[in-house]
Image (cartoon, rainbow, N blue to C red; front, side, top):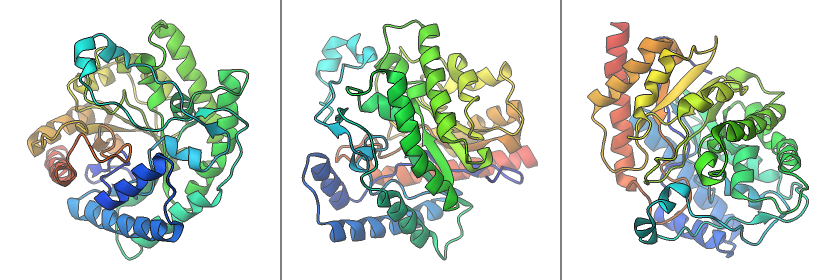
Length: 378
């Protein structure tokens, strides 16, 4: 994995806006209407080619496929694995539950979240190879700094797709780790940086386990990291990064577990780089955590410098200020910057950030990184 040895490198979390027609197809697919396979694959290929071009033009160094062909960053696995049927029960978010009148006015979440009701096996091993081939074709002849590909962690799959089959949560995680290892290995073997998405390490505290103590939740999160490390055991740490967040939605977030409570367990995960929220008003202050937490040798942090839930376009000077704060604490070579979370986490027509605003936000990040680099390298 490239480091910021000469200037601050930029990336993002993974999902980017999809073309409207592709979004419509994915929404229908999520609801149970299968598209024409050949037409769908062709549309995904053209969308990925376009998204690669846009990232490079925006000044993003470490790019990906924007998750153009995925219904959702976590729930896409139901199309690749057996054992998922029906719809899981979804509780109200604990932070919104504290404000029932406001919660009643929020739009209903329509993302399909089937439960695990049977044994998990592969039913479409070729899906990840298709993703790999599409991204390789899209980046051929271009010169990005580096290319990454995302995959759902065992913990985040267990969060979204509830277990109704395996005898224990631990058994469910273990099976997910064993199966998903094939996808992780395939991405790494293709030469891409693997990003494992692990929002469960933070957001599950208030979305799945609000009744537990912090100590009890941390023990669960440590189990998730243990399962993840087992699945990643054959991939070099410097070919991987991990993303954690507190839920990519505009809401109160006053129940978010503090970064300082989970940073230790997150840094025990095998991936070299750790991506996390650092721009939104609930977590921006947590740059100060690194005054007390010493970054282990070789590790890289990828703090968010763009809020992925607002249409405000960050000023490059503000982006630079955010970068410099982290760099002065952990060392500039140990910092890469990105967005708090994705800009198209699930394929839905109504997005939090307007698609045409995503690109000036990314350009502001690139300009802020240039300003910070000038300050840090003189």
